[in-house]
Image 1 (spheres, helix red, strand yellow):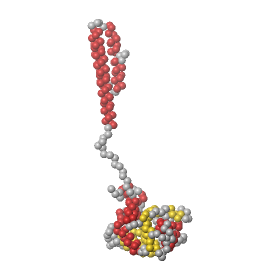
Image 2 (cartoon, helix red, strand yellow):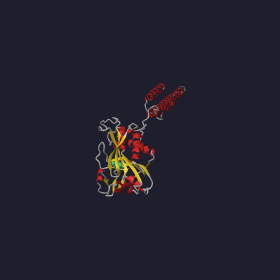
Image 3 (cartoon, helix red, strand yellow):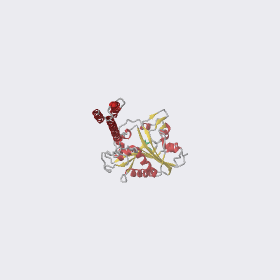
Image 4 (cartoon, protein in one colour):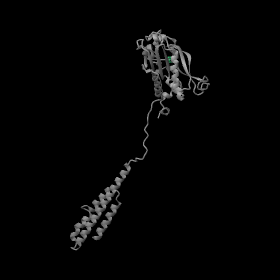
Length: 344
Ligand code: PHE
């Protein structure tokens, strides 16, 4: 019997040792320590043993049972600890790993340029006005001395919505709107940034939608030299003190006289190069003295009041300032282009 118990013990301990899952341990427990197991059987057969043998075998059987139970338990504890250890390892967070970079946005180059120009003119006492992008034929053309059928309407191909409504082709209607609110009396000193639309075929220098900044100053005794002074201050602050301006005669129906302003070429300093097409000058904006008809239609007496107006394209300004070679870059929103102009 002793040998049998010893053999059972060896068998059971070996199975415990080999067990790789908790379930196999449970099986060993049922198999060896269960009610129908071999050890219980040994204990049951004790009646047949002699008086002297009984306590010895009984004790041995109990010891074997305990040893097997202990082995199962410690193996189970070990398995559970290992499982926990593994889980902890798998779930652990490595706090030393570098974080994922956060994408930071920034103002669009066009927004920055418009704001820069706004700040410049606010500094000179101009206020900022806005007007509708869907404009009436009256404000977009008629109030600017462009009656129906006027040939100069063709200078700006338009998107008409109805006969009387269109997408504004320039920000100049805001001149007429702003003056119209003043009952022909108070002075006006405003700029108006905004989107404008023209039926153009998009290419490197044309876009069917772009932005303009309009400027208007109306008061008593406003002269052309005032216009030149303001534009000169603007050009120097925007492009650098070393840049010169010149005014060339031009034509706009709503200004008389009309001019176009050039700035001296930065690349060649005025000598002439490929950027300025050999002229030494680069065209920046259109301007002029407000036409008496425009003042009159807005309710001002042109004998008493005079004014100047100008209109510029911020895309063109940005292209010249930063050497952007294609106006479409402003609208195709390639993040690689836009990122270059984010200020840190
Ligand atoms: N509105 C003109 C244009 O879009 C620009 C301009 C504005 C010219 C004001 C003179 C005075 O071409």
